Image (cartoon, rainbow, N blue to C red; front, side, top):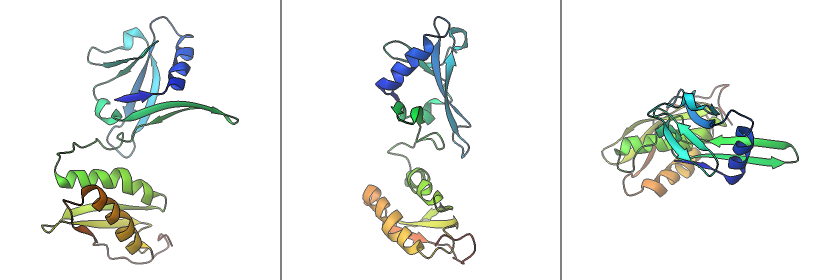
Length: 192
């Protein structure tokens, strides 16, 4: 479920040694499954442990997760790094904003999950996004683009060399390609 690096474990042990006896850590997601999802780590005194919490034991402490956060913390990683700029605790939770779908979920759900977790974060760097509109009977994924993607001079490259290539590599036996249904109009928002 959650991977905590050895350096992060050592960091937590050091922090917990300064807390009351029996204090652990809690890993959680606020607003799970939404665009505003935020992950966090906090101290968890013994009296704050709920009966349905999930305990993840480590060598010198335990991490607790509430039931609501559990599916959104699948594949989460916590690391602690130190360099000449200082030290930093990082928490990566790729499923915090969107619940991971099962490998046998409907094709629409799997394609949508892929777009939301792999494609849209890349498009966001250019102020853009895409939405899955449908998957046609002949296997074409139909997308609607918005933001900086609408009117972008590179949209054909993004669709064919980017999104379609990635989807065919992962789901090629289930889809035939990707189509863009956006009526692109250049504007001040478009990324060139």
